[in-house]
Image (cartoon, rainbow, N blue to C red; front, side, top):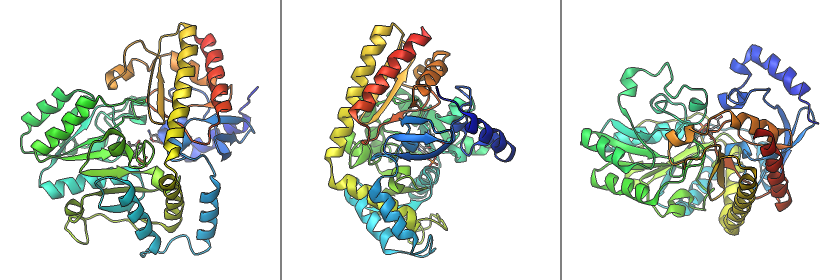
Length: 430
Ligand SMILES: Cc1ncc(COP(=O)(O)O)c(C=O)c1O
Ligand SMILES: N[C@H](C=O)CCC(=O)O
């Protein structure tokens, strides 16, 4: 029987010094209730909390733990790197090495600039698109999340929707007016915005496989149509690959879907769990970035040697072992089939979406194709399921608006345990 005594104590004292006791809102368990679990350590796919409870992890630090926690080659490389200093604030050879590797792995990326988070990467990519095209407006999709910079907090997914604040106070009307919102998987909504704002749109930014309204794969006609519209109207297509980059395939969603982007943003994965982000694209576009061009973007700790070491070690392994992607897909498919079987037996309404190693369960009977349909699953069943799974040692994202991320360190035995836990949990929510 799991008990959360120490987590509870830590949550109480944290709330005194940290807003809501957490450093990022989705961690607070607000939409599922109860006490957030405070963790002490993790190895592979198992996380251990401060009360000594063990969980099979389906968050993977929100994506980067593709090969599992405390992956030995990353730990060894980082230990070695810290001896040489934790930051120089000056260029290092490693920055060139990882940039070259990213450009080799990712299609349409000739140049890449490192930043410190996915938010910074997306914010900078929009600035570059504006600087390159000389236009101000951009289109995003309802329920997609591109970080917490002002212009993205308009109908945003992830924590913003979980907390019922898709439009955040603090974002001025002046900023919001340049963010146009279309419906995911609805090409007509994109066409309409373009025709209403002809010649004014710099970029369309999209999660090519959405993960911040749960996992919502793109309809291929839709995503191809978005690409064509961008080409036709001189709009830059920005793929936000903070979740999908180097996860769906070596070349991320661009390779996985066979669609070319003009700019791409990356995040957590390229830091192997350290705080990193990056944006990149064709040379002619990236040449507008300072100090070559006039678009200013900087970062004191950008290209941090420890983060670069962790990221390079992970990317190198992914690059050299493409079978990892097949293994991950096979495991996700095994889990999906197992879940379908126990859900069908249970009689509980559900939909499961998955793509590559991203998967989500939705407690709804409508196909989940956009934010509106995803929101139908944000109901009373989800918190019950979440806590039933938790007490059986399965750690899922504490919000119905998040994707699960599988790690290749998951064993088939752990997947079976998860399916069995799901079967038992469903019996509790009928
Ligand atoms: C698709 C996407 N873009 C951007 C971000 C923002 O990244 P970060 O939280 O590192 O700022 C996230 C995750 O939070 C994300 O999932
Ligand atoms: N959806 C977000 C990242 O992928 C959730 C993580 C966070 O905002 O803390």
